Length: 139
Image 1 (cartoon, rainbow, N blue to C red):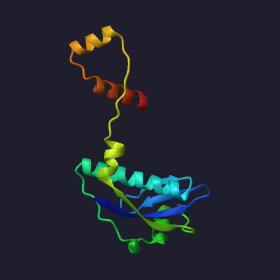
Image 2: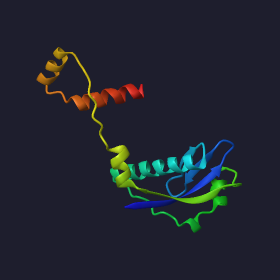
Image 3: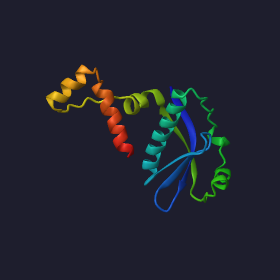
Image 4: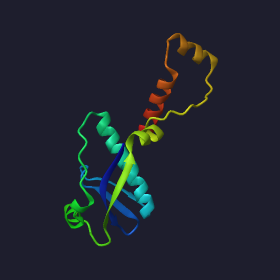
C-alpha cells in the first residue's frame, strides 16, 4: 500500500533539508534535490515501518494544500526562501522487504574446533554473527 506524506524542502547553502510536519518533524537532507528526495523516501519508509512494527498509530497525512511553508519555517526558525512542498510516497511493505528485512547469505570460515564446540552447544551461527556485528558497529 502506498503511503504519501507532504514534506517541506528547504534549499540550504549546500543541498536541501527535508521536514515532514505530520510526522513529529521527522527530517533528513541531501546534497542535491534528487538526493534529498531519495533520502526522504528512505526516511519516510523507516519511520512508518517502525511505527507499524511498534504497534503505534500512524498519523494521517495532510494534503499538500494544508501545509504552510511559512508556518513550518517559523516553527523551525528556517528561511522559507526557495522552500517548497512536495509529496513523498513509498510502499512501506515493499521497501521493507527490499531494504529492512532482506537477509543476505554470507560464507565464512572458522576453525573446525570452534565449529564443533558451537554445534555441540546448539549455537545459532546467524544470530550470533548478527549480535556480534551489531555490537561491533555500535562500539
